[in-house]
Length: 312
Image 1: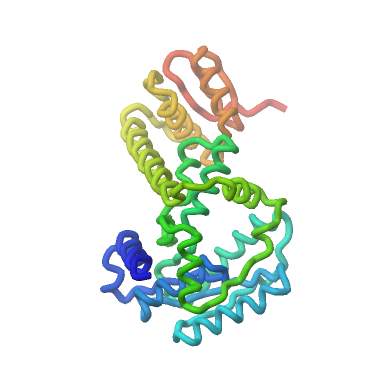
Image 2 (image 1 turned 120 degrees about the horizontal axis):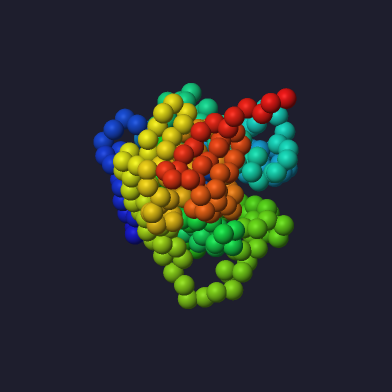
């Protein structure tokens, strides 16, 4: 099992260069499942004095309390600081979405209180593949296809190139029985249905999904860099108005430049793909179109400005 330990060490070093030689702390989000327990054990193996763990009990399942206490026991045996976090009000609405939002808010508050610099989550290669498939089915563009990023702000994901099977085997080798969350088998969730479909396929290296996602993320960064440079040369700004001097760019570049112009006029504007496409088509035909309170004029040099207020 030394290979997986070395892999984790290399992943953390790549994501947080020089971390082992600093006094920074790495927070671990640990639920009690095999993925997060593997994260906990690997982090303890590599950085025993620089970690602290937190388990969020959303209050959605009776078993969650026992699961959180199980994680607390695993941490206590290894002298790993651990805390159980609970939301102050019940979670309602879109359960998965709201639970995720609450979880990260609780973890962020914990990190600030304990002066923890980084947070590691247990997303792995199978999660990456499932996410890619789900976003393909939802028609995502290149930004969405970047899927789960290895590092985003203060959050790192050092397990992205390891499969769920590898993580499960590692936890078993440590003599620990992980929790099996029943929601992982609930067919009402899109991810569970995608996971079941993928389970029918054999002979694929799921770790390559993270390689594909990383390549797409590199492409996303390259396009963003190019757009920033082109924007500085081709967008003339005058207060909350602007003009796009050229519009003969490849479509993806033009789409992003137009979006930048719209944000100059109204930072709150976030038109979805089809809506943005309609604006571009209209402007290509020299038409004038309004979105929100912004007037987009396609005659000559494309201009974007606040729409005149309507007379009562």
